[in-house]
Length: 374
Image 1 (cartoon, rainbow, N blue to C red):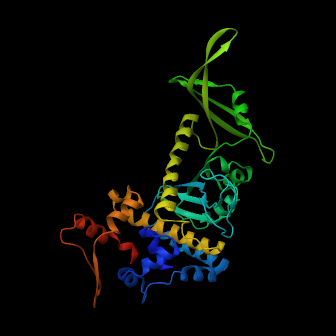
Image 2 (cartoon, rainbow, N blue to C red):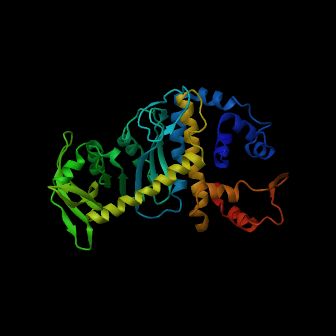
Image 3 (cartoon, rainbow, N blue to C red):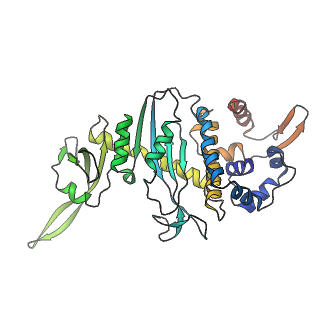
């Protein structure tokens, strides 16, 4: 477990490469191994843990929630819901064809993610099969997450894209007394919006907004939807022998219980784009989903370890304002992949940095800030 965690932080993936990684004397010393791991041992051990082990690990990682919130004393918290597609090549258990914008028709996994946005922490993550729809399990995940939130959190705001536009989720959020902002996704949305009465924005002639009541078949009540229309261009159209200019529009529609006007809601939703950057860090920089076996629950365990590595990276970076703004790849370049020598002494391990290492003072200053690990 520790080997996979350190490998994730160092940007190493795949079982054979992790085995070579653990053969490094420094890694062997840090992890407490007598020698490097066999290339098959990670797959064997994670498969032995099975579904019960995956569940225990997932729930056990919730014990670190107080650590993630240690220095967070605000009463409000934003939860950004999202999902991500991880394409796989092979016959891995649970990998299936589903929504895959990157490689249509390819098999994939489709994890469900929930970020605590003010902290950049991936607070909860469910590893799912590739044919799972975006919102599958979101209500159950939020119930699970609500149980682990610190008592100091008094107000929660949930934000999600069109994949989370479903009645049972809205019912749950309203029952919990949480605020929400969810993008509307309907098959006939464009036609529905075209039929509305639009109010021009007095400050911007290219913008217009509207509000209207809507109730889907499975909803328990009517809800207000708001939309914003942006003129993107003018097109020439031949009409009765004359060329006329007609505007083309881009639409965005939201369902929310926030006391904000349409333009403010639109701006608030756009802030959600930051979570896409965090997802990319989890997958590309911490290598989540890159180390795979042919067993679904083993892959779940490996995914959760990479998620834990991401949260450790974020928490460590949070110790210094300058480093907090950087992505994990930069953090790794500054503080993990550096020339050094580890020496075992009677009083513990001593790290020797080159005397003229250009980032030596920053590294030592950062190392002193990591009091949270003790």
